[in-house]
Amino acid sequence: MSRRVPRGDVGPWRDGEPDNGPSRDQGARGRENTRGYAEQPRHDGQGERYGDQRQGYDGQRARHNGQSQRYEGQGPRYDGQGPAWPAGTSRDDGQRQRYDEQREWYDEQRGRNDEQRGRNDGQHGRYEVPRPGPGDPAYGNPPARKARFRRTRRLSRRRSVRVVSAVVALFLVWVMFSVGQAAFKNNGQGVSANLAEWARDHYLGPVVTFGEWLSYKPPPKGGKPSFSLAVPSGEAVTPAKGGGKSKAFVPDIPGTLTSLAGKPIAGEGQWRVVEKVNGEPAILATFLRDATYTSQVNGIASIDQRLVKFYLRPGTEDPGAAGWGVPDYVPAGQRTGLLATFNGGFKLDSAGGGFYLNGIYHGSLKTGAASIVYYKDGSMKIGQWGRDFTMNHSIAGVRQNLKLLVDHGKVSANANSDVMTNWGATLGGGAYVWRSGLGITKDGRIVYVYGSALNAQDLGLLLQRAGAVEGMQMDINPAWMKFDYYQAGSHPSDPTPVPLLPTQQPSPYSYYTPSTRDFTVVYAR
Image (cartoon, rainbow, N blue to C red; front, side):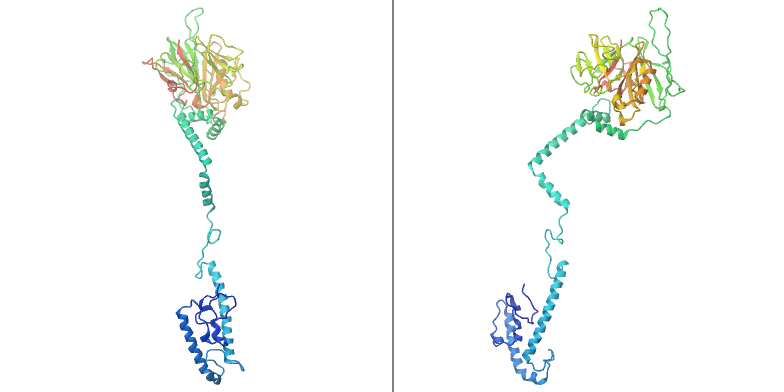
């Protein structure tokens, strides 16, 4: 970069220094020069101003020559402005020394200016407006997040990424559609139960179980029931005594059940009639409080097989459509004589057994599995498959579920061991949850029991107390268990369903629409 000096001042010429206007060798006017000012070449590009200045230099030189005698005779000062001339030196030597000192001063000043310019460059000063670029700290690199966004945009333009994104989007649309259909299905189970069932059907069982574990709240200990157990007027029954060899029909009325919670409250354990056939008590019901969770009530139904018929019905999803020859609900036109309905067992892929109806199998019937056998004459038996019965032409249907919980009148020894494996996963992994069971008594009555705070052993004890000699666990968890009886009233072709336990969750009308799971219907003979 060319060295500049202020206007009107001079500086030395240095070899190799480029010509850059008035900075070139203006110090010649202070040197001893044989050519003189008039002989100095005009610098290109100086402009008219410097030409005029040269004429001023020529005039000044003439004045200097004319005044030399006066300067030399008047003393050592130069016009009162310059430094004193040392003795024995000429005027030109002194002037050269003066200009050399000025040059040193200007060199020093230029160094200070360069230093100041450096400081100003760092501070965006006046000498040079900084022009930072990428990588310059003053410029400021873009945030990493923006860089990531740019990389993401570049990635999203790739064909393979777009194809994968389209496939994922289609999959998510399918999932949303499938979940929506399952959640709002009109089957009486409710949205949460439908979502849980959909998830288990799509290999998300562990996720459902974990969610249930997070939301599980154990039942409160102690307390009083939320509804009265007292027997309504006109519904109480007492055991009847047979008339010896009389062929008259004798109702099968069991004895009053002993409370599990100590001293019974009004109506606890006492039987009442909920359905009659030909004027005879066909279905009886009673209630027992839980021994520990005394605010929780268990419902018990006793069904006289001599007055009723049992039929197995398939579910739309479990076992699913297979030309079973019977509907998956109780349609209008088939409700005359309807007395009761109740739930089936576990989903078949978790039941440890199979399903058979009207000559069609879903899975295979397992030897040793607890089984409900439906006969073509409408009767029912409960026992162990392969030991108590095998397939024959008189069987209309078979529903298997786990192992016998009560066998020969005794509760299974492993009822409280390895509960999750032997008796099923429960909401939140809790032991005391909604459970249901089915048993048969020594005299052939069918007993159904269920409650909201039962473990497997309590369920077995409840079946045993109801008189069962063979009994099995049915479905568990609140959304899938229900026992409803039907009051004909003035509309025998369209009776009104009534839940046995007012606290059960599914709607009593749920079997009037297609059911996702199998169930049992009870008709009058």
